[in-house]
Image (tube, rainbow, N blue to C red):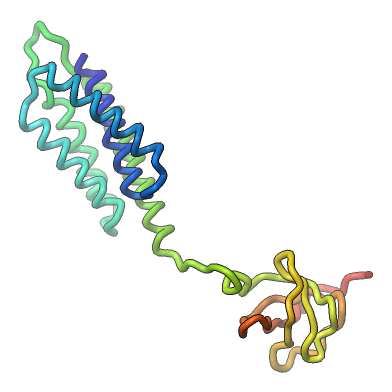
Amino acid sequence: NPNVAFLLLLIGFAGLALELFAPGTVIPGTIGAISLLLGIFGTVQLPVAAIGVVLLLLAAGLLVAEAQLPTGGFLGVAGVGALVAGGLLLFDTSAEEPSVSPVLVIALAVLIGGFIAFAGQRVMVARRQPFATGEESLVGEEGDVRVALDPVGQVFVDGALWRARVANGNGPIEVGYRVRVESIDGLVLTVAPIQEREPKES
C-alpha cells in the first residue's frame, strides 16, 4: 500500500532528523531507521518515479537547513512543499492500482515537516545558549545569611553553606537577611543584600 510506505518513509525521516539534532537520544534514531527500512522495502514493491525520490531528499535537506539557518521559516515552508510534491509524485501508479491519498500526503507533510523544523530550531537555540556549570551557575541565585557578613561570613545558597563577602558599600549584613550572588572568586561568593526583603525571624 503506497500510503503505508509513504507514512513509514516520513516517520523514518523524522526519527533520523531528530537523532541528527540531538545525537545520543537513540530512541528517535532507532525508530527512524526501522521505519525508513520498512518504508524503502514497501516502496521498492511499487513503481517509483525518480522525481518523487529527488523531491523527498530535497525536502529533508531543506527542513534540516531550516532548523540551523535564520531564514524566518522560508526553507521550512519550501521543505514542506517539496515533501507534499514528493509524496504525490513518488509512486507512478496507473488508474487501476492504489495511489497515495493527496489528503494524507498534505496532512502528514505539514505535520511531520513542521515538527522537524520546530524541534530542530528549539535544539539549535538551546545549543547556542551559554552553558553554565558548577559555581558559575550560582551567579544571580538568592540565599540567606547564616553568619553575619562584616565583611566576610557565610550564606546558604542552592542547598549549601558558602563563605561569602559583601559587595563594596553594601555591608555589613546581619543574620537572616536575603542576599543575591553577584560574582564568585574561587570558593568565596560576593553578595549584595536584597533591599526589599526583611530579615527572617529565627
